[in-house]
Image (cartoon, rainbow, N blue to C red; front, side):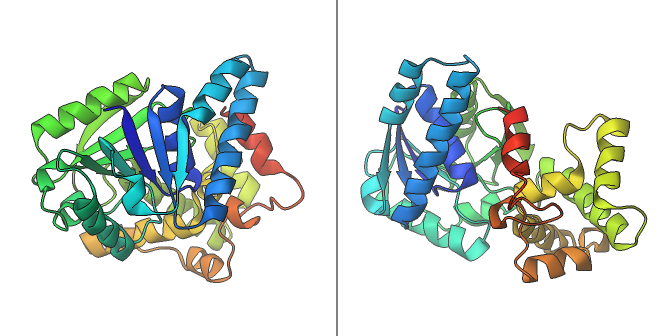
Length: 295
């Protein structure tokens, strides 16, 4: 399994592509937008430059990593020889179901189909294919090149062989695979998103300000990043989407998103990617400074 197709050149997709390429896998990075592919490749190059500056890799390592990645705007061409596909498109149920239906038609019969979804049912995704035993969740953490965890989610029909293959592959990327079962939010977001939502509720209720809430969690709970700042880096729209999935899945009011989060997303304040969320990233370059701490 040396050919890895990654669908989506956004934050998670380019991070996944970077990681596989750095470990000498041939990566086909796919996105419907050439502009998104160009931006994704620029991000990978920038992150590699940072690693070179910190003497974690050499200039030769950087060039080799970049040469391992080929970009495509055509899905069928990009997955033609893939042994594994990792889908990292927007966290939208209908979009993911459509992608997996297409992947099932375009990929070789022995290709494993993985989703980087952070909350959507792997069983539901797998039902769109004729190979549900070969569909699995492979949930990387952001920033992908740095964070060690990969949540491996087995759907109802995922085979033990598929799980073993993906878990072993994760180890070859110097990651730590953790097996979890297929329930809304899995483990990471089932715990994380209510915390972030509660932090937003705390702000909404006027208990404390943004920096004060984050400082309490950083200094009092030893979190490397406060929950509001973390929400900005995840994307407030992504946080909202995950909370909706969990609320719909569990029918429990504790997963209902805070009205402040809903309003911020409607106003286009998505966090780092829009330049403004709970913090302002437009001039302060706070995003780059914080990202550098974790690279």
